[in-house]
Image (spheres, rainbow over the protein chains, first blue to last red):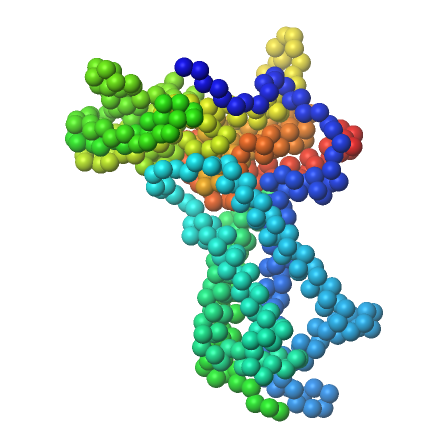
Amino acid sequence: MSQTLQRGPVSGTAVKTAGKRKPFLLDLYSTAVGKKYVMAVTGIIGIGFIIGHMVGNLKAYLGVIEHNGAPAYDIDVYGEFLRELLVPIVPHGYALWGLRLALIGALVLHLHAAWSLTVMNRQARPVRYQSARDYQVANFASRTMRWSGILVVLFLLWHLADLTWGWFNPGFEHGAVYRNLDASLSRLPVAALYIVANIALGIHLFHGVWSLFQSMGWNNPRFNRWRRGLATAIATLVVVGNVSFPIMTLAGVINYTAL
Amino acid sequence: MSNTLKNLTLKVWRQSGPQANGAFETHVIDEITDEASFLEMIDILNERLIDEGREAVVFDHDCREGICGTCSLMINGQAHGPERGTATCQLHMRKFSSGDTIVIEPWRASAFPIIRDLMVDRSAFDRIVEAGGYITAATGGAPDANLIPVPKPVADAAMDAAQCIGCGACVAACPNGAANLFTAAKITHLNLLPQGQAERFKRTEDMVETMDAHFGSCTNHGECEAACPKEISIDVIALMNADYRKAKTKNRKQLALK
């Protein structure tokens, strides 16, 4: 019985010849390990944004302050501050757009790396196990990264349409952050959506924050045991902070009245 | 004291060749001592099958003492079965109970094509080792012992990685079919030691990229570490990831790659 197996060339030593290479970053990105660096670095950018976003939102709890001699909601002032970033070095809104472009770039790269790695992994096992797997240490978070990620991206689109573009926000007023927040989260189904999506985000971060240390090769016996703790802390911080907004709106703590 | 297990149902993957469609075949083991190893249990089944004029179940095995890396088998959804830190050959029937159903499947990965039944071709691992799993050493008389000083913790860490027997359980257990633990163990073993420094970065780049051509990618589940008969830590994967990044920059300079 003849059996032909597909094999690569057999050689005693490494014979990889140095051909014309791609530009450095593209070359790095062409391997799975390189794509994982991109996942990790863009993930760090995302984590930075998410924590900053959550902390900024906490201003909603500071209510009304006096601003330029008139009462204003603190979070509205903060929203305007973001547009005023680096003024007068750059014109109004430019710095914010710079940050937005960086975030969009990071998101696109994160998604592309995730997509191409998923395709690669499917090809690495075209015939799946025909019996049930008995996973030993892979946890719910690590097993569902793709799904929690998709959920977060879909939520992100809704979130932009709701509170940035105002498509689904009744009586949307540009720049009136506190009013728009209250108008959106007072609707029970929307509040539920925000809670579910942020729990998905927390699950994503629980694996992602730990995983990025491995991907980047940041491994040191002195701090290895802190990596899981850090992932849990960041995931918890983000979920507790973000879930508090819909709950506090429903509870009436965040409640808009015209000034 | 040995006990006897009764009435075990085996569901064994049978496949007549690489291109054939396989299926589970059910066999009942009426009685077996719990001192039998898992592979001896299959031996006994095979003797019965041969007596009945049927084809024996084909499976990989060699040393049967956990050091050669030849045996494989996905047993009840776990690579090398339920015993931690052992290969299938060191799994004994005492880990099972009377009346159990035991499902046996081959490793599954596109880089590990099934040859027949439970036997797979793991030569993709050879491709990775060929790409850089060597050092340059002077020939001639044997050098004096301890001529090259190696700090004890470094020697220990390199030895931990060098324990890899290349069985492929890491790939089999990985939900993505990635070979990062194998490749990282081979890289770490040499990269940590002074003898491995000459080729360190060329090795890392070549082995990682050869791995990339055959296997999936790592998503840091840690299943490989749990399945590894030598319990090699995924810390070696982090070392490989760090060294690959260094290699990509250093090789451009040192090897004058354009």
